[in-house]
Length: 365
Image (cartoon, rainbow, N blue to C red; front, side, top):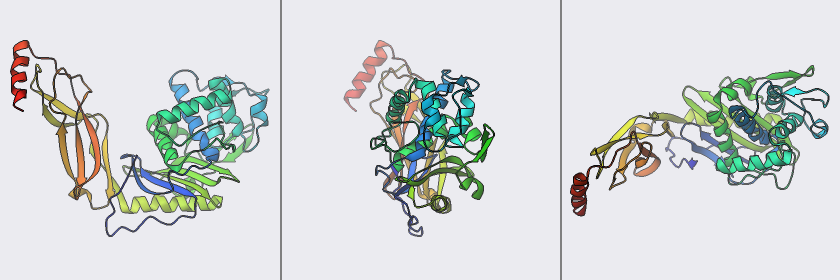
């Protein structure tokens, strides 16, 4: 993620929040809109369970688990302290029930049962968590458990939680939509509400996760969507349950009120045609490999300029999907975003005479 340095004169600074740290960013453009101590290491508490769910969704996608598969409940899971969904050792529980218990009820017991079902032990699952965190670019995160129970070696940052939340919504949108907006879940005849108050207070909020321990304070990762714009807020170390909701609401309202995200190019859109040397064709069509969005203060988009740069000399052979250049977006001569350009299709090498002719031409370039 890249911090958004553009600040229009008529836009106020972000609100002052009564929290240890926070981050607000735009999901589509992967741009930080506002933050306070976003890279400071903190205790994640039950926000840990976002990664637990992410790995469970990955196991389901890879066929290593199935939703209706039953998993045993260990004594460790049954006896764990803190919030629970109240699973029992003599009563097998399905993967889908455990997901509901972890995401909606924030069950420590269900998190451990999932961890043991995926990796054989919670310690082995923590290794998977750390590998996944590294893959996602979460450089200041380290896990030792699946629950978020306090440990000196269990930490993260607002920045890394924003990365993780984005990855979950992006990689498993159906699971996110199905589970994270649920306001209540009943298991073992015990109904528990989702602790995310904003699901009741803000119609644009469609989920994420709460966390709390005495040492971490009250924490909340929230995602909200208005029109085509989705924002994610991470609020850590609020003084109370109500405060984490209030402060998150302030942050989201600030983002939606003063910023906008514009889709510039959809994935696969032709951006330019670039010169190719020593190829069976003289040009290659350059496209973007993923959707390109820009986040800016409202009213600033009309002043954005775009510039395409080719990786010259661009010499065949060129394979489909190979980077062939980049497109750079500027505002007032400041680079605000850039995206690599890739070949829409491959270009084969020219015959010997074509290659010789281009070799001579390149001497004069």
